[in-house]
Image (cartoon, rainbow, N blue to C red):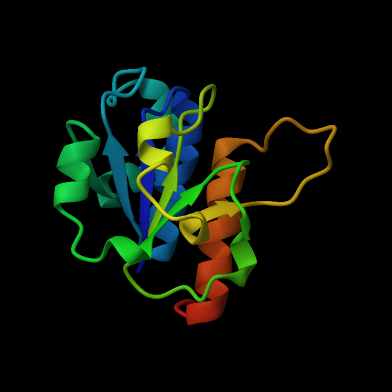
Length: 153
């Protein structure tokens, strides 16, 4: 299925919700760099409920370590409000990487600068909104991919 990638997540309940979603769709959850909380913190496990033990979780020390594990960088999609490609205009494939930045600062420039504009996705929203909650954003993209690929009936 998909690879959901969180770069330096900061809010335990978001990561817990994303882990539960990952289990539900068979996605691998990658956490890149050190999260702002202890990964075993009760809040993460509580949000993930009894699914935490079923989660396929891969921890990466830093961005370089994460990128070294990717065989096809053209299938890495960065989700950013500065993206130029509407998330639903992508033809998703199995094993794609959906990359999300931290809740307060998003993805760092060195990450965004290393991928072409076509790989930078956005979720439309009204100008009054600064951003969409991280776990909601992950769900929007993950289920668009599931819809296209048809992995869940």
